[in-house]
Amino acid sequence: MRGYESGLCAEFVEVIHRQAAGRRVSAVRVRVGARHAVAAGMFRQAFCRAARGTAAQDAAVHLVVSPVTIDCDGCGRRTESMDPPLRTPARVQAAAGAAGPAPGPSLDELDELDEPGGAYVCPRCAGDRVTVSGGDELALEAVWFRTQAR
Image (tube, rainbow, N blue to C red; front, side):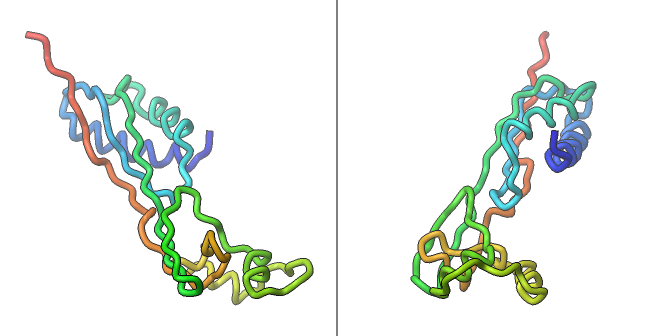
């Protein structure tokens, strides 16, 4: 089990358990942006493990993954993607029309990857002059509680 999903789920379960105030939780809906690269199955498994012994134990987990939007300055295309293409030296070199094997990234190129949108390229032209938005959400959208038997 990847640690990233486990860490996220532990935090969500802590918040849910506090909100429950003694009530049992029947279901939750969580929104995670595609930039987090969360695997749905791993997320659900991690949630079940984190929820053991809490108000959220046995709750159904509805995971909503929101896309990344990429606007390309090069070709003008706007793309929404659940799995946006990452910038690699080979993609940048191909977009520039260069031939041959791509060298490893320079220190300057690695610094650019830390800038907003710097890690992605256009899925159409592989250009790296893109503006990236969305896909970074991380939110507990809803919690449903079980009704008490009378």
